[in-house]
Amino acid sequence: MASRTTTVSRRAFLLTSVGATATAVTGSAAAQAESPTDGTTPTGTEGGGNATEAGSPGGGGGGPPDFGGFLDPVGNFDGSVVDARGQGQASVTVGAEGNGGNFAFDPPAVHVDNGATVVWEWTGEGGGHNVVSDGEGPLDSGDPVSDEGETYEYTFDSDGIYNYVCVPHEGQGMKGSVVVGTDYPTASAGGGGGGSGVPQLPDGAKTLGVATTVVMAATLGLTYVFMRFGGDYEMPGDE
Image (cartoon, rainbow, N blue to C red):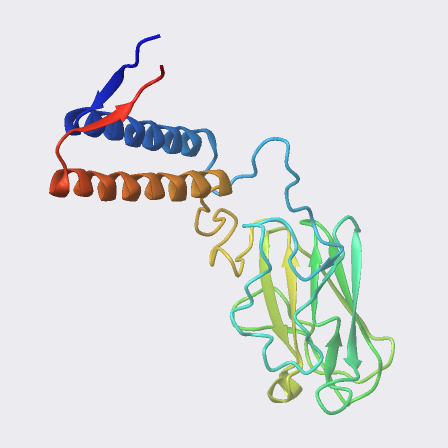
């Protein structure tokens, strides 16, 4: 069989390069369009459920409650929120050990359902204590008392975060918080109920984006070489 050659010109190379680059860009764009970038969980993957020991309870924006630094000085607060959702009633001890004496609420933070009742019960230790909302709020047990077995209860009917203090021992860090329902400020969203943070780009789209960048860089580099040094090149064909 007679031999033949195939001529490859600069024009043919450029057309081929442009076509390859366009294909890569189109593939990357299609992958991004098929993958959700609005912070939602794709179908078929497991979402973040409610935590049982709620360091990052569900509800709201799906992140941990944002106490705005209110509980930072509380000696017995380790960042976790006791999850009492699904229960009609939750209990908080008043005069528990903490903050250098019996000057603590235990637990200092609890998460309950809307409509649940929280009962505060006095230990009789640490002197007189009370439960009063920090700033405006519905909680007010009255004057400080020191009787063991004294109780105060409140039923929450609105979502949110309810911060409270023991007035005589607030300066020692005797503070607490009740997280109610699902619409409350979260540390990730910084607002009640709705946000889910900054949208994340799916891994598949990231991978294709990198591949597209590599293809474009290689194409531009080879194009420069052909245009700078090149004429037409002949490649041996099949015989």
